Length: 545
Image (cartoon, rainbow, N blue to C red):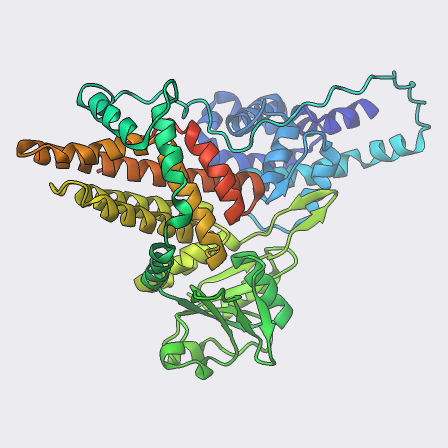
């Protein structure tokens, strides 16, 4: 009997569980697997009593699990299920703790592998309790003394946020690197007095960077105001629940930047000087917010005593029902779905939960953000995408779209056949692009952060790309046809340089967030982005059509 129990508990052994099952238990497991592996059950042996082929059923389950992760073992199945429920699983978590976590979290997921893992976990716990009890009663063998190991030599961490090797491709030479470009380079070196034997392109970069403090911040502050006005403001009404529950939901969806104010529970975003909010969270009776303050959407925390959402419908305010629970997946969800048929009602667990030492991330927020994005009016959807902190991919898509559009605008500005006249126009477009990408990705843009941001961007361009860009402008000094050709080349270079800068900036922010779980501050951008840009292998990448 102990051998059977040990086989059931073996983290590598799916067959052990099945061998310990009765016919009805095996039939229940088959019913969970067959809809998703139907071709496997066309085998002739599956027409015989199921107790004669548990080994084949174990093979089918293992191959299904192996397609998702690992070797298809029982441990792999449990790890997949816990991960899909939002748990962060360390490599050394044993099967018994994974089972306990699976059974402690309510049935919040109908994913096939999660349902199968829960079912097998229940079977395993029923079959192994005598074995586990015996193991706890038996005396533990004394552990052998651990050998003395010299502490390893500390290894300095690699520089953060360097691009992956596949991105670090050598940039191809351009026509500006030779011929007329070299003659223009000589002219530029004479203008700024480059010292013999010094990298002239880098010295040009240093020369331009030294002028950063003299550049006024008006274009940056103006771009912030213009881009924020373009995004608009989304007004979201929070109804139902307690002030604490509304605060937890706001923190989980939008970051820890909101605080209650007064008895009405109005939630306000701190308002940096000179900036307006992209998001206004409202709380209280829907009728109290009208005109320019009318909500675009309501999140209704459903519980007994919640005002009927019919009042919102009468006021023309669309709404989404939220069942707040310690565990996403609550009996109240079925209750409210029956009471309000056809309404969008989602279970949400807004705070992390620790079960058996495994941390389960908040659940249901991604579905809530997606449902909200579909309901909001087009004019405020971009503002909502910029302020939500759940779906980074959605923000990245918005930011890259802005980069592409403004890069094409920069190409149009750079194609003007007027010598040197378009430099300011292209630079103004690049400033707008950086600001638009920052807002879309959720970077805080306060007055104090604009100069470090300007230093980072101008310094990045100056150190690696400004030499080629300035040369393309000087080419327009050639009379006649030279000015037209110069304009065409300048437009191409302007579009490519602008897009490459914006693409690199968005990728830097994305990787920083993946590593730190937040967006970088102004000082971190000033220090980190120039290093990232120096390694970026797509400095002349044209914007996609």
